Image 1 (cartoon, rainbow, N blue to C red):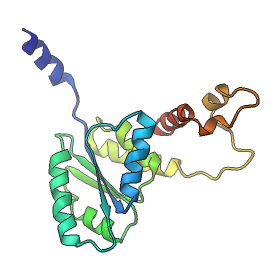
Image 2: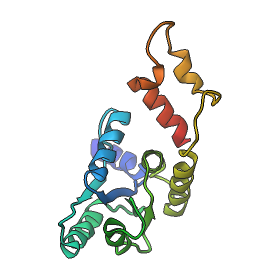
Image 3: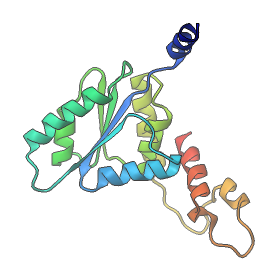
Image 4: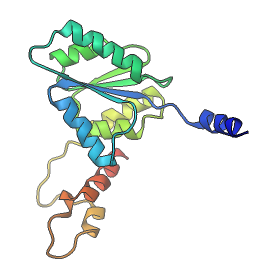
Length: 177
């Protein structure tokens, strides 16, 4: 009886697209650590490959293929890479296919969007990630409105709330919407 209930529940869980970050070392690992900080732990199905200066691209490409196989769900996978035309991006591009999308120019807002929207169809997920990446790039000056949620948590005479972990999470959720 419990097994049947579990199967019904299990069937209602949408698939999550796997996420693989391929970037110049140590950028991929740093992005993974940032997302773990934001979410209070590492979300499932996120892999990283830090490409070292002396790496063999053929070996890294083979490892990347095995990582995609490990991370991919029925919803597919997203590969995020740093610099278009560089070795990590060339390796990532070789993984592109019908159920694997590759996006260059990764930044933290893109990764937060990838985690937040990974249960959506792959085309929608790709669009959301690209929007998050571009919306996350802003010029800030003293007249730029601050996050109202972060301001509400500030106590008079205390440090800037934007530097606190809770403000980071609020900001990440705002960026991801």
